[in-house]
Structure formats: structure tokens, C-alpha cells
Image (cartoon, rainbow, N blue to C red; front, top):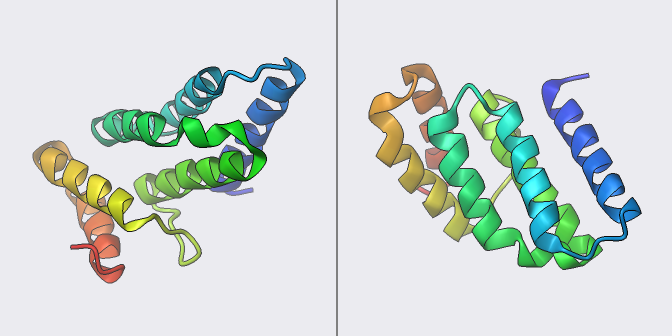
Length: 130
């Protein structure tokens, strides 16, 4: 099992636990999923922290329904893949999110590992969001 598969499996468990609690508070679920994402991306806090904050601001409201929850978890998984080298062709973000990711990368470029920076920027350019 690859790390990305384990990430998604753990996220599914978080969703199941949230449902079993009978909670309708999407802010609590967003906080749980964001903490999960941050725990998996500890090696890149300069990117994970601001992008997790962005995800919470942008996607918390979408957690109110099942399709929104699925899309929001997919988004976090795609970001996990981008930051850990497991990003694949099936993963993508909306154009506005690519902009946010690119801007965050640019803001943190000096403090980043050069190999990771090059890898992420190559993906951004290949997806037409440079």
C-alpha cells in the first residue's frame, strides 16, 4: 500500500467516525481532515500549513453533503500527492486552486528543498498554470 492509499484510507475512517458521532458541524470535520493532512505532510510545513488553511477556508462549506465531502477529500489527497511526490495524471485542481498553490510555492521557494520545488513547478507548468 502506497502512502497516498493509506492517506485516503485514514481519511475515510475520519469521515466514518464523524458520521457515527451524528455531527452536522462541517467546521469540526474540516478541522479533523485538515489535522490529518498536516500530520501526513509534516516534512513540508512551509507549504502544508498555508495550503491546509486555504483548503479549510475554501472547502469547509462543501463538506455539508456527500459529494462535497468526496471532492474535498480528493482535493486534500491530490495536495498530499503533490507535496510527497505521489501526484499522478488523475489528480487535478480547479484553476483558482492551482493559482493559490503556485502563489504559495513562490512565496516559500527560498525555504524549500530544491528538488521538491523543481518537481512541483514542473507539474504546475505541465498543467498550464505557470
